[in-house]
Length: 149
Image 1 (cartoon, one colour):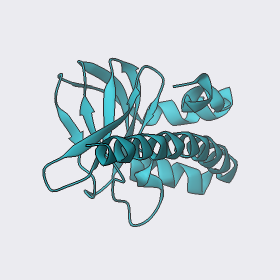
Image 2 (cartoon, rainbow, N blue to C red; image 1 turned 30 degrees about the horizontal axis):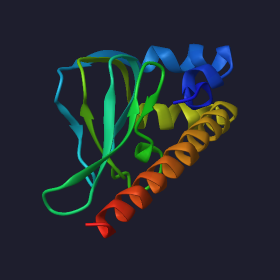
Image 3 (spheres, rainbow, N blue to C red; image 1 turned 180 degrees about the vertical axis):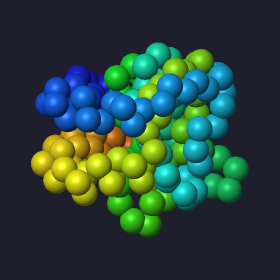
């Protein structure tokens, strides 16, 4: 992940100062499923330590791992857009510590402070663009490998 995907670093300090009181420190043990594709997205995280692997379901039983996420990275964007369901799954690759944000509280803050909401939306959009391009590349690679068998 590049520095440009680090959401908190992209926000002006005043907006970070408004957002961080909504954060709760949480941890996940290695191999914990953090969320499943299609489930209700009602929170998001900024990873402090550890690594999380995003994945996409390719069959009922198989998941294709995508980009690993590490310190400073945003985990979860589906909380921002209806129908508020996860687009990917996520699993702790190592023990993880993160800041967890309640989606409703953050959306409420954005409604009260539209400029913060616009800045947050722009930051999340950059993360989404990067992640979707990385996912597309992985899926194309997996398809090519599958065709050669």
